[in-house]
View 1 (cartoon, rainbow, N blue to C red):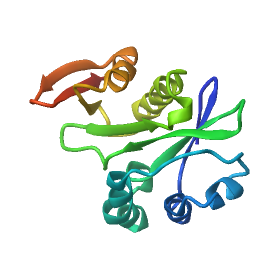
View 2: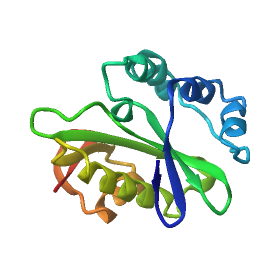
View 3: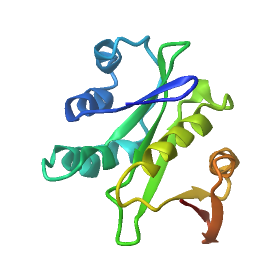
View 4: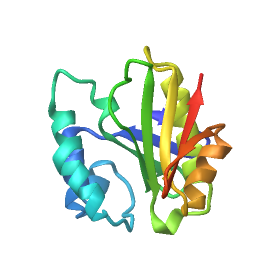
Amino acid sequence: MLETDRLVIKPLTYNQLVKYIRNDSSLEVELQLENTSREISPELKEALEQSILPAVGDENKNYLYSTLWTAISKEENKMVGDLCIVGEPNEEGQVEIGYGTYEAFRKKGFMTEAVGGMIEWAKTQPGIKSVFAATEKTNIASFSVLQKNGFTRTGETATTFTWELKF
């Protein structure tokens, strides 16, 4: 578990991920949180079922590099968004980060703060030398989160920018 000024950032266990996917408030009940209005995109649901859950269930892997981490507002006692590290560090010591803020909590700086907390955690992990991310070119809020956390743009495709923060 990580903590920032306004957030608690908690890695979800296998059983908690199952409850997250159900989206029936059972996760909020378990974590003793107020209900949050959140939607699970078809892409996230597929990723959860096809890759995240199997990786988290693999006892030979460190689940912290595969699971969703939920960002919880201390003041509101609600989940405001999610982050994940997409797998263990590669040969160059890179990990990929992904994140999303629930609609009702956007434009409040929560994800900038959460990504900053995750970066501080990553700096303490053996083998991690940098964090990278990809954003849609049209998603200004997403790449603003990265810029505010010191990432630099390292490339682009027709539709995406790639970003990296070395430490």
